Amino acid sequence: MEELGAHASMNGEIIKIEDAKIHVLTPAAKYASAVFEGLRGYWNPEQEKLFLFRLNDHIRRMFDGMKILRFETDATPQQIHDWTIDLMRANNHRETIHFRIFAFIDGFGMQGSCGPVSYCITSTVAPRKAAFVDGIRLGVSSWLRISDTVMPPRVKCVANYHNGRLAILQAEAEGFDYPLFLTAHGKVSETAGSCLFLVKNSRVITPDLGSDILESITRDTAIRIARDEMGVDVEERPVDRSEIYLADEAFITGSHQEIRPVISLDGIKIGSGKRGPFVEEIQNRYIDLVEGRTESPDGWCLPV
Image (cartoon, rainbow, N blue to C red):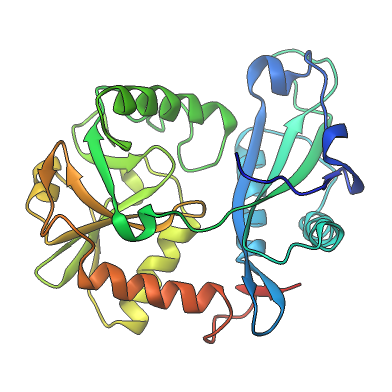
């Protein structure tokens, strides 16, 4: 169990974490009428600062999600930004964290309710996992990834994550670390909560946005590091399952997972079956970026 920050923010008010509650009859609880963002703050011990990574981009995506779900809210992106900073200062984290920003339908409405909208922000201490080096084992799930004709996979809608939960339970029962989803057309989509990349013949390949994936901010970060810093061609296109078996390397990306090597799929070893040189290099560049050691685009690393 990760260590929770002592405080949460509810609609801009700093409260004790144990008081961050909603009623069981809210549409958020009854119908999963909520969106959220999960992102990290990276502690830099040399500078004694916590760097919030791409906060504004995450807030922008959350407002996109609320638009698609027809939430009626008076809050502004600047308010959410300010409330987040206030919470980080109240919790005074001096280690790397993962935090979540929730927007949900409050009150006692019904399935079609669009308001009132409330916000909650929480944080947990989140040290880097051993899988960052050791890698993960994927298994293709019998559950298909939800499509844009069913629910909007490109936004972080809470209800979407039941799709991932079912696949995770199956993967664990079958002895894998994570599931890999296919689309209804049989193409590779994503894992439960992270995007997939493969490396083949010095090229990087990843499923495109039409493959029912989340519009992942960490995915975008990895693409830009590979293209702009490493000078590697990145192909965004439909991907076949069998391509992954024959890849030189593979990895997943997500705010919580960061960048993790994939060492096997369906029990078939990928490359050497260990973290490869490309993944190690992009990980190192990613760490230097998010921890504020290298220059980043404006607004990507916000010091607190």
